[in-house]
Image 1 (cartoon, helix red, strand yellow):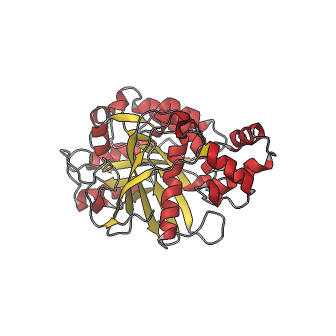
Image 2: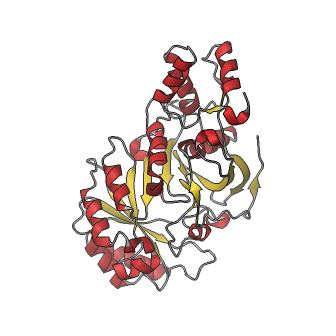
Image 3: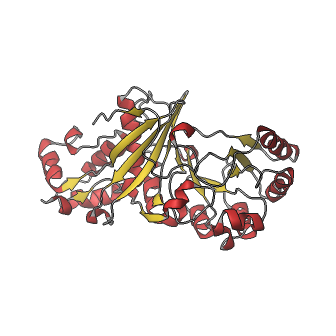
Length: 374
C-alpha cells in the first residue's frame, strides 16, 4: 500500500483502534495491545510491538504508519532544558495537507520531567510581547502531532539517560505536560482534547490530570467547553494586564473576551479540592509592573475562589519591551501576598536557547546543539 494511503495510528483512540482491528478480522483485545504499545510503552514502530503476532505486525507494517516529527535540531540550555525544532510532514490521512514546523521543550528537574507542547504551528492570538505571534497562524496540529511532541522527547531523552521509562513503570520521574508552546490550545479544542484524553488515560500514556496544564489567552467558549470535560487538564490563564485598557493593547483577544467575561468563566470553572486556576502574569518593565498594577490584579483575583498567580519576568526577544527590574518584581510579589493572593515568581527555563515562555519563533540558532541519535 502506498504511503499516502496508509492508516495513521498515532492519535487514534482505543475505540478507533478497536474498529480498525475488527475491520482486519482481528480480535478486539489486539486494539488494547496496540494502544498500550504506542502510548504506554512508547513503541514507535510496529515491528517493536512484541505482544502482537508476527503476521499481524507484518500486516500493520504494510497498511498503517506511526508518523513522528522530523527533528531538525535540538538545542541544549545551560540549565539542562532542550528545545526541539521539529518538522511535521503533511498527511492527507491525518487530515492535514500542509507541512509545518513547531517547537517542543523538555525540562528535566529532580524527580520530575516537564514537556512543553505546541498545539498550533504559529499563533493567531497576536499577543504583542510574544515572539510566536510574529509567525501568525500556520495551521492547527492534529491529535497525533500533539501526542508526538510528548512521546518523542521522552523517548529521546530516555535513550540519552536523562529520563527513564514509560509512566507507570515505577522507574520514571513524574511527567508533567504543559500546553504552553506555540499556539492557543482552545482554538484547536477538538484535536487538543483528543490528544489529552489519550495522554490522561491510565490505559494510554498514564499521565495524571493534575500533572497537565493547559494555558489559554482567555478563549471563553473554550474554557466553558473544557469545564464540561469529565477528565481535563488544569487551567491556566495568561493574564498579563491589570485592566481592560492595558490588556486590549497587549492582548487584542481581550477586545472579544474582556476581563469581566473572562473572570466570570474562571469563577465558574470547576476545580478539585486541591486544584487552583492559575493566572500567569508576564511582567514587562515599565508597562505592567507597577504597584498600581499589582493592587489591581489583587482586586481582580479577590472573588474567584481558589486561584494563584505566577509572576514571570519577560523573556528577551526582538520586541520593544524590557525585563522588569528585580525591585519592581519583588514589590509586585509582595503586594499580592499582602492582599492575600497566593503568588509565585517563576523564572523561565531555557532562555539562552530561545526555549522560554514567549520565545518560540522557529529560531534555528542556539547554544550547543545535541547530536541527532536517530
